[in-house]
Length: 254
Image (cartoon, rainbow, N blue to C red; front, side, top):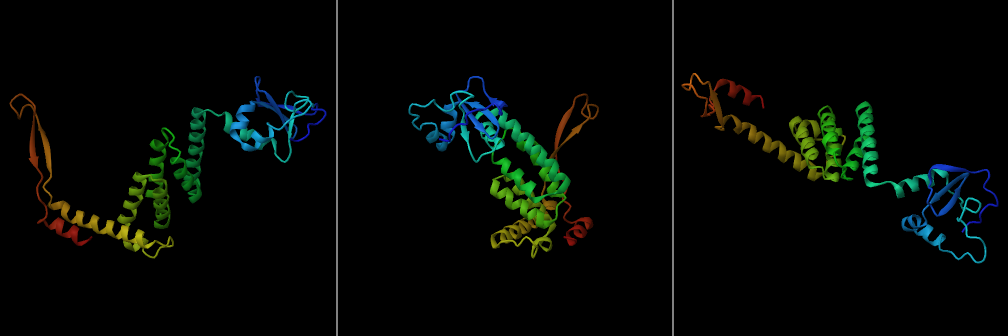
């Protein structure tokens, strides 16, 4: 254990982590911290070893302000961050991460930074309550205005983060743009990624070709006058437009 200085008159108590019922005083640079010995021991094997060293007949370091444990090689900000990690409650941590993620969203919207977007996907892994409900619409809007190289990076980030809704959204955006937009792009698609996109492109076109021929049911609400004084819902069927000139022209353009 480091040797305590003979006087701490030139030190100031930390405004947050000089805790009234703390039982070990530490000096980091010119700042005094009074925290709980058991919390430090649980948080770090280094502190567990340091605070369990035999003291002999000398006054126990850390017992009071006049005899603090002196941490050499660390800054007050670094130790304050450690205290924050130890003492922050789960609900406070959630609030902090939400605020951080909100700031990241604003920064990404302003700068479109890949790093910021990746950070949002990493925050998703923290499973913060309420995060996805406002982060997901933002990322979708960003994806809708992004070019294929950025979309490919977002798709990869979504796969890594296991964020299925955004994975499918970016996949849909890429498939909708067509192979010419992403084959040979700067993102260097892997074989598996290329196969997945081509398969999605094929399946989407197959569905689009069949869509006008599908007989879809719908309900038609008629007025009370038409129904003899009482409202009725009458099931009807959609018309088939496969033989119409409009459909033929539309299909040719695909």
